[in-house]
Amino acid sequence: MADGDPTPGLWNWALGNLIDADRVRGALAGALERSVVPLGDDGAILCDVYHVGGEFPTLVDVFLAPAGVAEATAASAVSVRLGEALLLPDDTLNPTRYVLAEPDGTLRPVHVDEIETDDGSERRHLRVCTGTDPACALGPGCGGSRFEPGTQYPGHTQYPGQLP
Image (cartoon, rainbow, N blue to C red):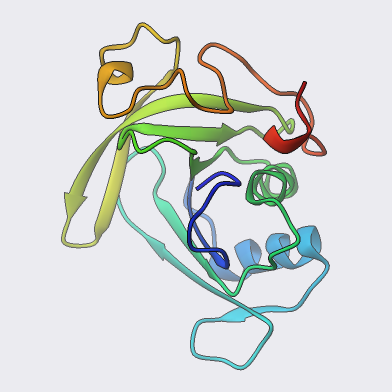
């Protein structure tokens, strides 16, 4: 969850294109300036990468993520390095709401329809969170998020803990 995750050290992302696992781990290692290895290997940070269908077909699970690094900052930096959009869970309990890290470093709240398949969760129908989308009414709503509906946050050096 974008910088409010109750289980620190675990990040679950989805990339907007089919990306090779080694390339994902390389971008993550560069962004974190730490060694990143496949799940099952010995290393400081473990990363599992697999593919599903949908508009965000590369799923990335990061285990033992460093506690001192904000997830949104890391996701934005990885998005920039890969030149691909990246979805990460936001800080609400709304199951359709995510934060989109764009290849230029911008972070913005969005909604995505999610379908469970045998291969994993497929995400489709990306749309900006405006506060008026029917999905905004689900769960606790979007108004309580640090990522306010209809707002974009430029640059991967800023994250909700640093926003005005």
